[in-house]
Length: 516
Image 1 (cartoon, rainbow, N blue to C red):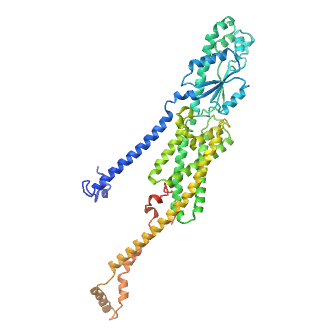
Image 2 (tube, one colour):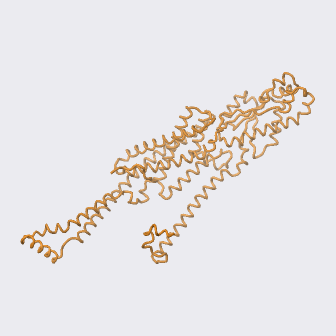
């Protein structure tokens, strides 16, 4: 089937590729394609390396995760934990940092240390746990009242990078507790067996399973959607702001505000529109998170605060993208957008403890700040990093507002220059059309004029009216000229391609159009 059958004009008036006139364009096309190919390949190669580098040898950095250990017992169980950690210690295992009970006089202070993110998690042995276990093995009432879940406890916050702490913290601490049980049985088994009451089932149960690791989870976060809070959610928010920016620019282009209003009023209206867009967009994002939070214990106040935080994040990204479109040449705006997204997402894929030290540059990016703010909100203050996260966000907001407002003046300036150029160009084209029509239809040949006058004289008894007859002869051309002028005046502004300095950034056509 020939496609030319459906699109016959597609092949009309096309020169051969070997035509000498085509050769320069062919070489220019090849050169431009190669340059842009290299530019894009280097860009995405760099982004891929930056992204993969943050995940490189992640397991080998797990030792940077610090776990607090407090032995309130001071007996055989604490010794078993130390021996087990000696066996498990490696670059792929968290670092156990033991502190004396004097520093943390009760378990609540251990919980506070984890909540204050002094440590990623904590492990403590209950006071008098070894003596209670020895008594339980002997049987009797001590065995009946023995609680093996009140021996060893880990404290952690699952809301803080849930997929990471599940494997790097929770699983490893469970492995440590199990290894300590084996060490305890092997080291103290010979001393325990003579006192073991084999006729007491409770004593046998205490001997075979001396403890079960208890968990104090500051904020359980088990819902499936937790996997994308630090990836797709942030990506979609950034892309959403790009589309918001395109539609806002579409509004300004449709209603020609840059040439109709004073710049300060344009800036106010623009910020009002962007604030409304991002306000509603962040509400929808927060609502979606809450709608799929199954089993996640977060309340209404956390919803509102999360909404406000995401609103700030969304608006500052709108401003950042707007600044990109103001000060960068248009061909580089998409590159800046994808680089901004990749760098922000990389800053929150993993905690900095699991990435090379270079990636701590992510502290300066808003995505890392907003994610830490959200963790603080969701875990009710157990991620106190607002002292740097909020200033980072507000710096982007304030600087973005200043540069975006300055950009309004820049755009208004070039819009007025462009309007003047367009009006001058349109006036020149109209004058050229008038001159062309005058030279084409003006009757200046004597023979033709006499013929018209003679014809009119014969018809009206010798009374000639040459001016009136010339006007009648040129009526149709005048109408055609006026129609061409009307078409030129009404030609859409969008058809006039702006220069790079006059670009207003990404601009999308709106579903709603102004009715003329």
